[in-house]
Amino acid sequence: MVWVYRTAGIPDNLFERFETVPITKEEIRAIVISKLRLKENSWVIDVGCGSGSITVELCIQVPNGQVFGIDSDESAIALTKRNLSRFGMKASLFLGQAQEILPTLPQVDSIIIGGSSGDVTRLADLALDRLKPGGRIIFNTILIETLCLINGLIKQNFLYDVDITQVIVTKSKVVSTGTMMVARNPVTIVSATKP
Image (cartoon, rainbow, N blue to C red; front, side):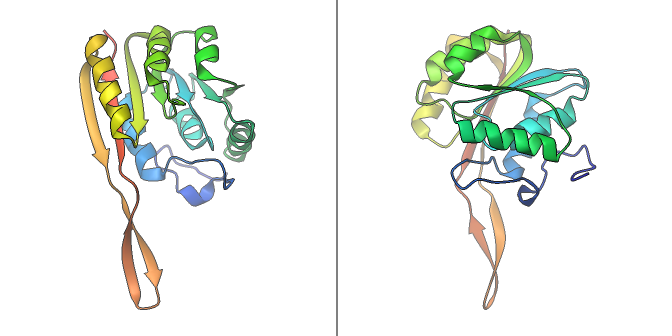
């Protein structure tokens, strides 16, 4: 078995990777998982599953639940399948636009929106429709403009227990003269609860 722990934040190097498919870094995944407040039987949707790193982590956290992954990139779905298999996990994966797939899915306890394809307002409306009352929604963004839209959506939909956290991770890198710290791009994680 590749990962024998229930701890979130599987090291990135344990996942299979494609150069063209993004991965949510391990530190961000650990924070996202903590903000979801999952139970063993939670049902969760991962919008923009990419490499499947969050999808795999969700499956570990909800062994008696159900995980749905959505991505519009065929390579991403293929990579997510490979990573699920690598970690011995199962999830329901859907290739296509989240705006078309979300309405066909059951109501769930938590939703992560990691990619919006530029239409975060419509995507958020559809996601909130699939979210049970009291469920948690998470938005991950690197763009200030998207953060502004999300903030408006939170107020418009009367979401509560809102937390906005910006994470800047620096990782060590060995160079010829020693070890330096290299910063990654900041990621803003917005979590909220549906009334």
